[in-house]
Image (cartoon, rainbow, N blue to C red; front, side, top):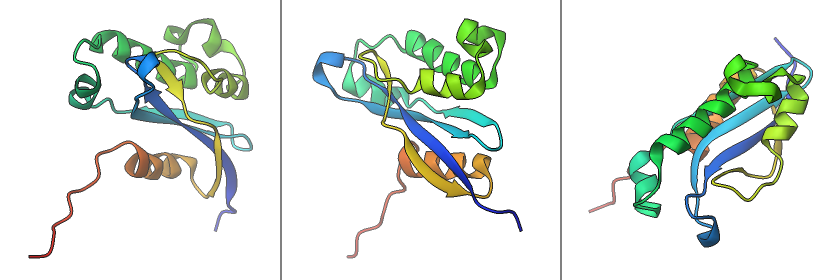
Length: 136
């Protein structure tokens, strides 16, 4: 059995109108320093985005979200930031900013598999909640 590892994560938020401070959770970034894991998962719910701002530029938002995935993966599409060591990339991605793409504060957890933790956080914080049937 593998020992639990400490990991950090942040929720990726889309804030279509920064002045209104309304946001939509659109992804998660997970980093595990000991194992060198850095990965983002993104799932943009366009209908929910357009409900917050009917004039939102969905393609621009998608392009910026793809950049987060590319930076985490260290791909050339991530530009010069993607060339930094993975912890520097995580810190750059989670730095506070006032823009259409923001992240939550960084949280810490324990896991045996950071990839599985990423999926669990996506289920809990990003993906739509399952409908619950009300008693008759």
